[in-house]
Image 1: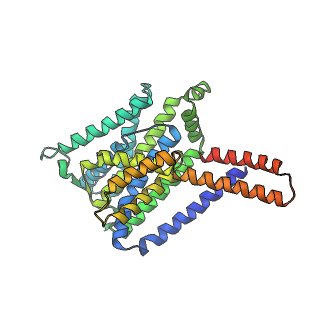
Image 2: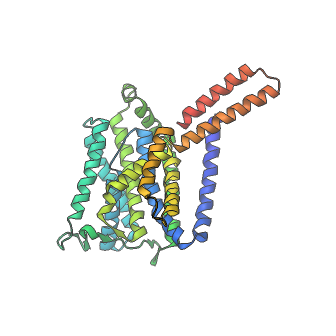
Image 3: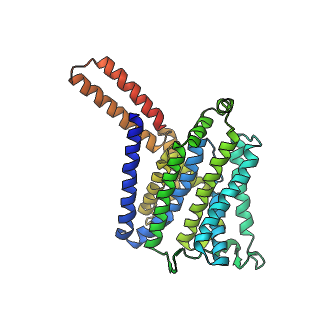
Amino acid sequence: MTRDRGEDARLIALAVLAIAALLILPGTLDFSTAYGLISAIPMALLGLSLGLIWGYGGILCFGQTAFFGIGAYAYAVWAVNFGDTTGAVVCAIVLGAAFAAALGYFIFYGRVSDVYLGAITLVVTLVLLQVMRRTSGPEYKIGDALLGGFNGTGAPPMRVPWDTGTMLIGPPLLYVSLGALIVCYFVCVAITRSHFGRVCVAIRENETRAELLGYDARLYKLGLFAIGGGLAALAGVLSGLAVTRVTPELFNLKNAATAIILVIVGGRGTLIGPVIAAFGIFYLQKSLGSQQTVNLDLVLGALLIGFVLLLPQGLVPAVMTLVLRRSGRRRDFKATRRGRRPGRAATRTGRGVDRDLQAAE
């Protein structure tokens, strides 16, 4: 009960900080920083989607960018043909989730192993990349929307639903992107704390035992995979809006690798970890972007190797472990000062820390 209250308190504090950032940041940032954040938020949301299905479902998907690109193209095609950007966002999310569900059905109900799952999703992404690159002719169009091949197609700016004459460009788009990230994060938190989420974690830990308890592991994994696909599709929409264009490069290997890096660096089994890692990499890119001495990709590669070797848990779990251990030692010290027996206090505190660490992981 105490642990649940502590977790609730942390979530409330995080919600307050997120709302404060939503209200304050867009109006205080300079143009270049605001534009960079608009481009970084979609990657944070992409990392969050992979963090949900990999961290809580044990589904290592190398092709999360497949849903990322599908969402962006679905938004552009719908907006060009119907002129309704709100409906285009909904269409993109539904199509991304539907494609993930269709792909996941054959993977999970076909009992494909984890290694082949990663290979299949990666191949699907590469196939989509090559297919969209070969749509440069005028005959390649959906309705009035030309797909454009390498050049891609335009992504019409999002409009306010109740005032279609107002376009969301610049700081207003930052409000929308940041708000979408915050909402999606707390939706993911709610999912992981629900019965559905707990069953997914049980399946991740031991799929055979979960099935012996009566749960259909394939159905739960399929549902989680579809939710991750919808989140990735929304990230693709925000990415297209950030640059006002949708190109086949959304499906490329760099984006696929970035999503995995965000989860590894931030910490698998956490939701806030990939988000923090995305903003940390954005800060790193902004700091190194103006110099030509050090290659940014080399720095990111070294960063990934360093985290894998030195902090295999990831940044957030490592920090939480350190904080919990120090708080446990502090309670032992206070118990000793009050004249209690250190052995009992240490044992009781150690067990509490172990439970907290298991929850953090």
